[in-house]
Length: 181
Image (cartoon, one colour):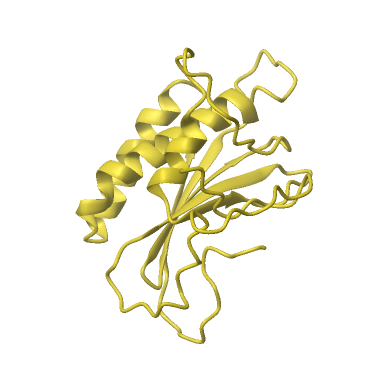
């Protein structure tokens, strides 16, 4: 079953969008958190900042570790990562774009490891998450969070997969909100 972050419901609302290029290095995560926090405060969504900062941190960390790590090593600085925020119809979408075609893989965490839980954190804090189909320019990994600032019909929110587990999609097919709770 495929779902979208913004299902079509016939309503028209003016979306807000902002994006920023971030260096493909250790500063990306901190700069991304700061950019996300100031953007959400500017949109009067201060209560979302803590969870959003954690989601963005994990999206960027995964892009640096797995997305850019999947590219051939180079001596020059790598291509920038892009962080985009879109607010539309009571939802804020956070997206990180990298040049890799490697897609995220939600794995059972190693309970003795110090890493490997990023997608589980994103999964727990977001309404839904997924990625765009990779192409020669890479992909975007995204997470959507309800901001509750606009009236929402029940049809706007995707069904909670915690109640019904989805089958793993074929390689290259975007995962939309797989929940492992």
